[in-house]
Length: 400
Image 1 (cartoon, rainbow, N blue to C red):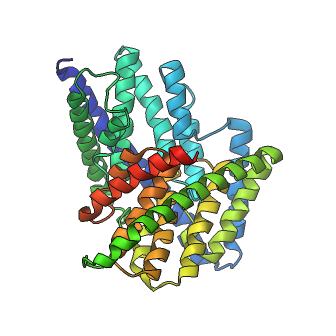
Image 2: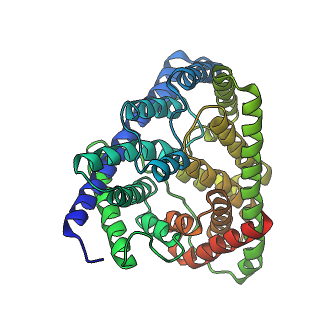
Image 3: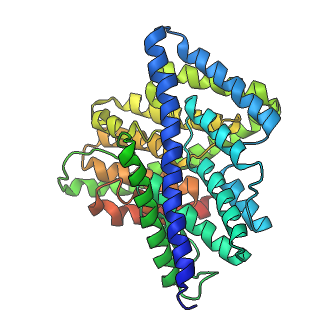
């Protein structure tokens, strides 16, 4: 396929719009999060406030599930709808997705924004494709590029879209030249990041999705921990999937949206009384947590990691729907630091291997996982992180 300048222009404009929309959405949710969880509590000074907020949020989520429908859709739901229909329904759907996602995120759910953004962007891209009278093939390509740009902006991972291409078994289904597709992923992501940072420049947000580690000191003893770290990551990834299935079965037995929403909200409020790190998706707390993690006890870190995973699957299954990538990374970062505290050799490498293996098990996408983690951990550790992702994928296939 020869290079299509018009389509490149469309994808570049789309990338910029994706970045602006993602930034605006996160700025709005950040405003409500600060209002609900910082400013109002400072005025009221009421110890049981988190439980009250969890109850109110649970009622709201339950009412959304009962009267509006199953919103916001998951990333899997959005992709499945597109594959089955060739589009993402946008008529009277985008507003519902937007409203439900803002409620879920604002009331403290341990859920990430990527799923809701995928639903919003999928609808907008389908609308844009209809206005431009694009074929289903071109709309599909735009959706892939848009999702890649979205992942690149919110995870500060410019190669996330290229990672999606590598998941296609090294053969593109829609472009004769795979390198043209990779080029389009790259330029769309760069425009997305430009739009994202441009809006944030006028409305600054705190730094997100970053980790702090001590200066790298190469130590041969860390080599003995490579396989144990990957094994720990695989184990906790499988544990996350097990908890997810168990929570889903319990939710199906209850099968009452408002009651499920209230139970989820009370779990959020109760967990927040134990530690503020249980709240939200985790990207805002990640850098602050990593600065103190090496001073925490192993038991505290394990409880935080397992508790964060448990709250995430409860939220997801009980109507507080969203993405699981951010909370999964935070949860397994805590587990990785527990191992690094036990064996204090190159903590950045140990934590990186644990997170890479575990998140790969959860997402089932080693190259996307590696691309997301590329700049989260020290770059010299990336080859080991990539190998951990690939090994976890192969072992998961054998285990399951």
